[in-house]
Image 1: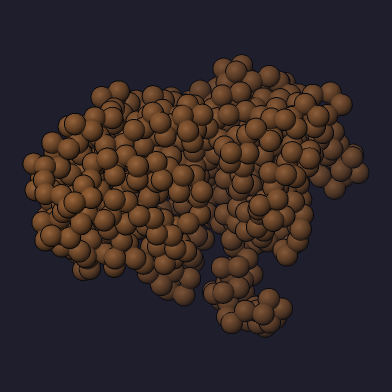
Image 2 (image 1 turned 180 degrees about the horizontal axis):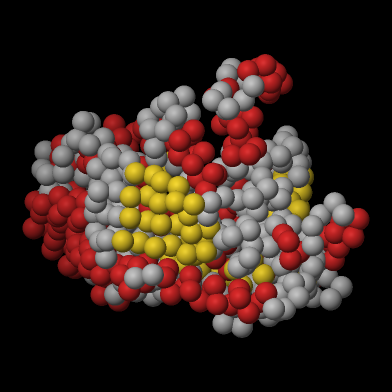
Length: 640
């Protein structure tokens, strides 16, 4: 393995380390989960030594500040919709490669990865690794996905997914041997490995031995026709899509590599996930993970979940809990035998205002393109009052910025134009052409209209409404009157894209703990769903065929930097791009962040161990609970 490989992704050294630890483990006796011992004894399941890969991934619990656990127990969770079983895939966080707590990419399902010049990726599987049904996991599973799914016109009409395209060109795919595959592009593809490690991962392998029976190229026609009829779908493509869905694991027959396997067909009010007998991770003492035998996910009305948690119906719960549930949950904690942790939210801002630089109203559009106006609106907000009133002072008054856990954290960016300075805000607004006022003290726009600013909301958060009411008081002191308009999310999105929304409220950047290998897509016009520049984002995502080309110099520079990241060769290049993009966003205030590091209640049974007391709750790159390795959670004696 080359020094370049290790420098680019931190994968080489990790892979060699894992291989070395696995060799030491083979000399010890693997330790079977008691729940599987009966099946092994009766001969319906092979012994653990035959189920594990030759080199399993050994989880260094001591280094991870975790205790060696014990097998057994059922973990209870509550969800508001049966589609939420996707969170088992998120929380399980078994990926070909994963982000570790330092933000580096490390092999997980894969044994190691070799990278040449940022464009040739050789993936090495673990010899002897098996799907949850015991069938070998091999290069054939990658070949099947690439040749029979990704490039099949019926299953993917638009061709391979974006992370596998560079300048619109797919890779050259090759099977080198039974446990080695290679993807090679003409130019670098820094999106590839991070996409595999995502909370919602890019699939590049499927259990070919199972899926071929649903594919027209491989299945016997009569048998396939019978499957289509039984499933009540229109054709084999729809059948294949339904049977292959792994992110939302609705098909109990679909083999998986995750720590737990769904055993319940939808629709259902309770989904049961049982341990994967072939899971590839073990602890330092040879115990196969996960420690927990089962996870039960009960489906109930989302508005009832806080009350049910308070009644003791969950052992681990974060989803559907809000900060305003904290007092109630805390009062019931001692009675129900759980503790309430307060993890930090991982957004750049829990609440952020987004002026629409592509607004259809030409006057507001011109004003919002003036950085003095954006800075003035930010300086006019009393963040301390909002933090105290809404978040009990537990948040951090800040702009939309990365958190200290990111290598790109800069206190100056966090506090850029985030102080409360009404005098400077008024001066900037006067200088921007808003000096005139009517008899009520409301500023007049350049066309003579009063400065009545409507802020659109998706209507999904009372927290946002509470914050906006306080912002309205602050901006009224500046001579700008704020009004709130709520609509359903799909209407909200359409209004933004159509330019009918002048300003909106949402959260800040999704990933506020990025490393160099995370794409800086939130910092530049990249998508039409971005409320601050939807038409510029549409132009970028459509390759210039739709929308509008960014004509603001700072926004255009961000577009160029994002494009440069997508063809970068080294982590050093990517880090430099991130820093420049963050500096531009801090100075330009394209998004007005109000408060970050707010708290997410996480309810944990007093019997459950290895759940961190403090953590960051973020979809990317932490997969919410996933980065904290739920496969290592366990019940103390007598628990579960």
